[in-house]
Every structure is written in structure tokens, then in C-alpha cells.
Image 1 (cartoon, rainbow, N blue to C red):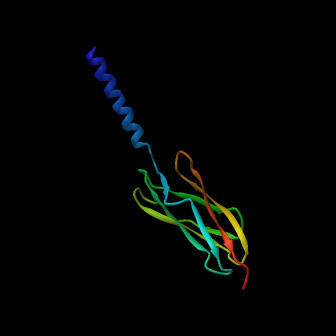
Image 2: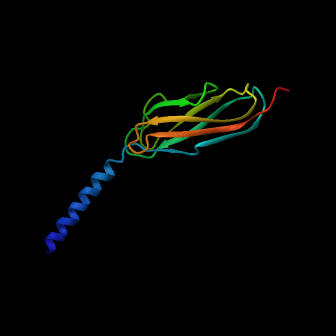
Image 3: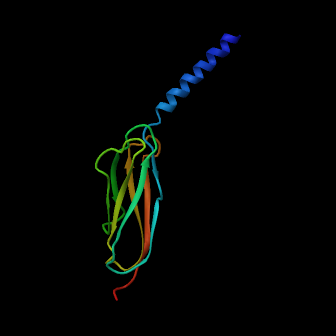
Length: 128
């Protein structure tokens, strides 16, 4: 009977090891929403989303796209190694006045939930 229990424990240990090694890349953003607040017309519309790869395999940002042409996102060029950080730069066209809410969709090689949404929002004042 004791051997049966040891075999079961060994089997569970082997399964746990296999699962822990298959985590793969993981993406963790410092924030998923950036609030510009109230900004002047034609002011600097660049903001940065910082993220890190908390997994155990290289993270690849496959695609980054915005919900409209007034927002231009820029993704990192190469893979992000485990434990490393990188950024997604977003440029909003601040010549458009009034409130705005935009979504940036990110596609990654993460195994669970490979598609993420980032948000920007704010208000651009009219020209003075």
C-alpha cells in the first residue's frame, strides 16, 4: 500500500513539473488604461504602456492595432525575454477636439488570452 502512495505522489510531482514548465510567455502591464486628462489642442499625444514578460518563454507581440486612424500604436520589434520589460507607444492626434475613448488591441503569443485591449481616454480642448 505504501508503494502505491509513493507512485501516486511521484506521478503528481511529474505532472506538476510538466505543467509549470509549459507556462510559456506571460504579459503583465503596469496599467491597461491611460487617462490623458484635459489637454491642449495640438499638444503632445504620445503615451507609453509599459509591460513585462512574467513567463518562462519569449513573448512576441504579433500585432497592435487601434480602433481608429486618429491613434497610432507602435509595438516592439523583437521578442521580449522572460523577466524583461518593453513598451507599446501610442500617439493620439490631439488636433481633434473634444472627449475621446480609444481601444488598442494587442495580439500576442500568450497561450491563454492572447488578445488584450488597452484603453486611452481624455479631452482635447478647442483651439485657443
